[in-house]
View (cartoon, rainbow, N blue to C red):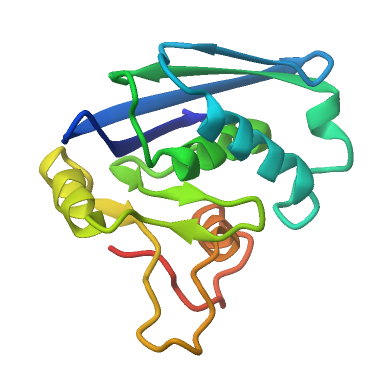
Length: 173
């Protein structure tokens, strides 16, 4: 189903499975949210990222200004962190009408430039994603040299939604 994404995020000293469901419909660029407590900063950041990089992500012109987005989080605890990438993928999936492959878990946060980040304990998140049933885990592969470019989410979304298959994988399986 388009707009449905699973993630594992940190909060209150624990890892928790969370499901995001995004719906996009005719409107005026408004955002509504249910199922989330605490700071909505990661959500606002993810939507701003999508608007700023719409063309690069395959979103037509001012589409996000002519659509409203509703995002629902299932299983979210207060003060949860590290879920911005899942929001980006959920909204992108809903906008394009393309479902995320079943069993895919998206990890990490996204910066305004597209930088894709995991916390220092990102390995624990990946292990928990597999524990909670993730067969395919999308997470940034951290470069091994200081000269390498930091991971960016563009390549992962290109591969996930089939726009480009020739890009080097930055997703872990």
